[in-house]
Image (cartoon, rainbow, N blue to C red; front, side, top):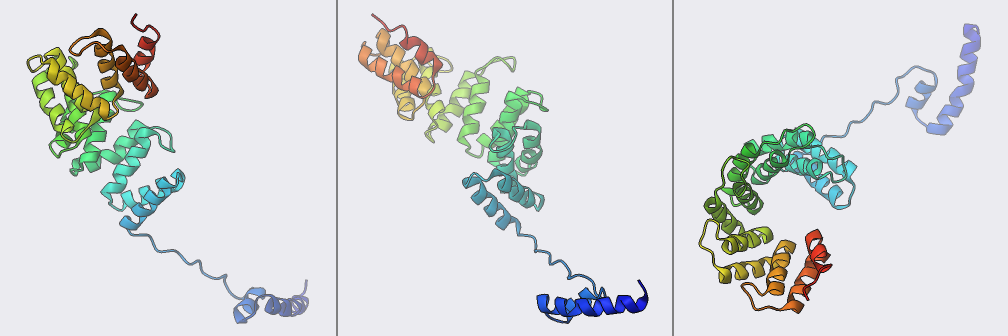
Length: 271
């Protein structure tokens, strides 16, 4: 095409460009004499705004959006976003469960003093998982840091570890102290655990009356383990008057809440 022919072609295109879009910018664009319009970049959200958006997305079960908002806020320094993001990976809530990734986000928040993060880091080290080696001693250290800040879940988990021989010794007296602290916040499993220590006489003199009081509190807080143990006591008439209907009611409720042991015992009721 000769230069003269190209010019005529451009002049034919010009009215169409003006009619379709209007303005001198479109005229210049049609002639190839101007660059396209610059892209307008959206300003980054403040960390607290991004975190709030993440919470809204998570509440709406939009986990992909929640993850992205949390990452943006966490990378901008938001500790709550780190905790929420780590919790998603730890539970596998809307994302693939990934303990190593959870630890990546949670541990800096834990070191910064966040009790929820400390409790979750403790859980990761207590159970272990892909990419994370099980380390009960490290778990206990993190639990106790969270427990000192009043985190009921950490108080209970720390006590649970102290009742086992995995650290080379048991410390039921120390466990009882932690269970009581969590029970004061109505932690269901802690209430039951205090009752079981009274029943077994571990770390404290055996006291059947106190044991039943604590187990009933655990059952009232919907802990199936408390219902299971109370159901057995009522069936057998130990520490409480024998009451098979009440024992059966408790065992059935425990089974409804997911207790496989309660289901097993209901299959072989007392005569």
